[in-house]
Length: 336
Image (cartoon, rainbow, N blue to C red; front, side, top):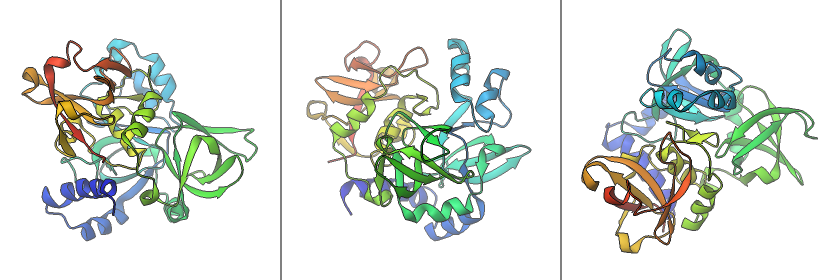
C-alpha cells in the first residue's frame, strides 16, 4: 500500500476505531441495512430538518436547481447559510441514514471523515433526493468514471442529443463502457447515461487512482479560480474553504478530513521554510494560537489558493496578506 492510500485508510480508521471503539465489521453490516445514494447533482445537508427559507426551495428539489438557488441569493442571503448548513454530497455518493423526520432524513455522507460520526459527515436532507440504488451499488465493481472537469453533462443518448443532468467535479459513477470519445455510466435511479470522455478520468476502482503530485492538486484547484464561495460547499457550483481543499485532494485519490480544524491534525507537519505546492496552510484566531478557522493550499512563491469567505471567490493570495499572515498557524503535507 503506497503512502497516499495509507493516509486515507489511516484517517478513516482513526475516526472509526480510536474515537469511537467501533468495529469495521459491525459498521459494514449496519450500513447495508441503511445506505442510500444521492440522486441529485448536489445534495445540501442542513443542521436541522425544515430550515429552508423560500429562497432555498430550489436546493431541495429533485432534480435540484442548484444554479437557480445560488444565482437568486445576494450576499446577505448567502451569509445566513453560515451555521445552518453542514456540508454537501455529490450525485451517486453513498450516505448512511441515521434518522427520519417526515420528508427529511438525517444522513452521514460517506468518505467525509469527521469525529462527529464514524460513518461520515452528518446533516439533514430531503428524503426525495435519495435512492436506495441496489442495482446501482452492484455496478461499482465494473470500473469508475471520475469527473475531472469543473462541471460535466450526463446525456440520455450516446449521440449526446438530449441532456439529462449537469454534475460536479469529483462526482464518481460506475463505468459500464468506454468508446472513442464517450463513456457509458450507471446512475443511482435513472439507469444508463452517457458522458464526454474528456470530462472524466477512468479507473478500475478507487484504489487505482494514480498517486498525484502536489502540482497535480494545485492544477485541479486553479480550474476554479473565480468560483464564488459557498458555506458548506463541496462542488464545482461552490466551495467553502475546507470543502475546496478536501475536494481537490479527493478528486486526486486522497481522502482527508472534511473540516479545516481536523485537516490541521493529520498529515505531516511542515515548517514554513520547507513548504511545497499542495501543502495545506492553516489559519487560527488569536494570532495563530487559537482555533483553526481557515485553510488554503500552497502553490509556491509565498502564495496560496483558497476559497476565503462569503464576500469573495476562489482566488490566489500572498500568505502574508493582511488577515492571513498574522493568523498563520502551520502547515500539513498529505503527499510525498
